[in-house]
Length: 325
Image (cartoon, rainbow, N blue to C red; front, side):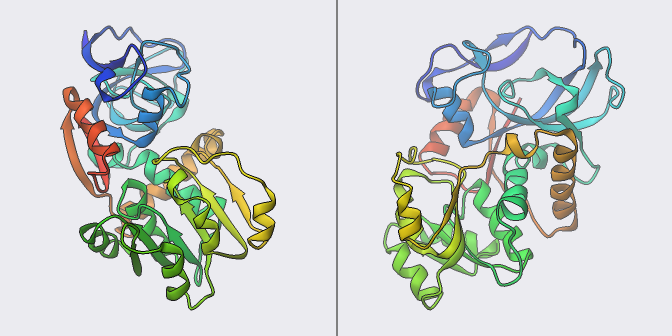
């Protein structure tokens, strides 16, 4: 029996139950992993509440990201062995001391990346990789607005976009978070509680507006985000920390400047094994070179998953949060 955090009924953080579970031997194409760290992400709260349906029904072990060591290999697994260090993003099952994983959805961890770094960056870091390189190609001269710039995705995105040559504008909720975003590559910060972010974007860009807006907030920043984008620019909605964006008349995109709007998700960008490996490798390269640092600003014991979710949803966190089994 091993410790895990399970959800038996949908709801708030209090439905996260710390208990023991049985982890069987790995089956065909599976590996068994002793986990050293588990990532905490907003998507975990969506599954917990039922905004995203659980693919395995109830009950389920929460969490979607982690890193650890292979302890057993099932039939048909040829490219992994006992003792290998691995990391992954797989729907559900992460908040546990041990777990089974499909071998084709994990990547080997380079020696220069720690388990804690990996657990704090696989979902967020690979999300930033595809957002900045594939959804919209950020480069020299790009003006990008990143909402929640001091959050887990935000701090990585600010560093990476800056590294690619973009002018980075970040919205934040406090002066402390503004300082953090600036220390991580944001050229300009906007205190969204005190300032009108659309007006500030117009001032900062001298009326040119942004080429792209990256929005993980959702309801609270839409449709105002569209007013920050130049004609033919792109609105990228990749999360909904404040609630889902309601259905809207698509003609608004024409009136705001023939804009492109997209709602991407990591699963589709790494569905093919080769894309998963390439995306992870680019992330490992950026972190390994020091171009992107992964700030693990909150660590919790596995049994304190409820507190981790409360802090995350209360916007009391910065950078990445992890659970230690």
